[in-house]
Amino acid sequence: MMNRIAVIYQSNYGATRQYAEWIAAELDADLFERKMVTKALLKTYAMIIYGGGLYASGIIGSELVANNPCNHLIVFTVGLADPTQTDYTQIMHRAFRTEARQPQQVFHFRGAIDYAKLGVVHRNLMRLLKTVIASKNQTELTPENQAFLATYGRQVDFKDRATIQPLVAYVRELGMA
Ligand SMILES: Cc1cc2nc3c(=O)[nH]c(=O)nc-3n(C[C@H](O)[C@H](O)[C@H](O)COP(=O)(O)O)c2cc1C
Figure 1 (tube, rainbow, N blue to C red):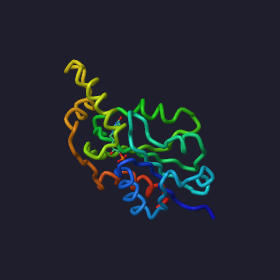
Figure 2: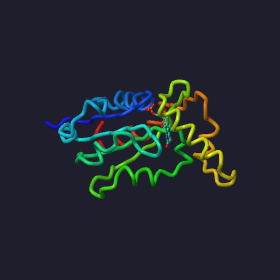
Figure 3: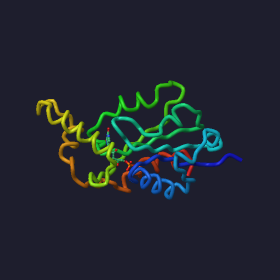
Figure 4: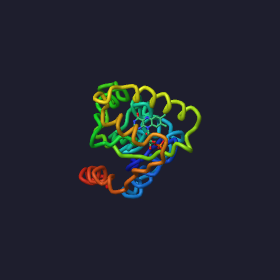
């Protein structure tokens, strides 16, 4: 018999892992870190829910589900930008280029950052990004840019368990949980 739901995540600092744990608990699903998963496992589940942190407008680890068939694919992203203000069209387009492998549904959640805990590569990337954004004309700043500048160098945590409810409801409506 086919397994029911696998929640697979890739996370650098724990925010995506936290959302994956909340979702798996709510849906009584199996939980896997992306590096533990082979492509053969994907097909053994009726539904794959893939979550990846947003890094430089990429969904980390998304190649796994973008390049290999899944029976029913849901994707969630975790980033610092406010999902109600952010246009994810380009991000999704870059991550899922193959027409036949588009996720059936996508959800976006808000994560966290602690600049004091960033690795050296990420710290330098953020410094570079700050320089680029800060040199823009005020009127050219997107909501994402403004959120970036407002949180730069600080510790912020926007994680919110309640925001997974639309994803949970979607899966329940399908009769999968
Ligand atoms: C180098 C770097 C690049 C990032 N790029 C983005 C981005 O493009 N969009 C966004 O919303 N958040 C971005 N973030 C914020 C992370 O997505 C956020 O901290 C998220 O909670 C990370 O998830 P994780 O803890 O599971 O790794 C970036 C963070 C770092 C350190």
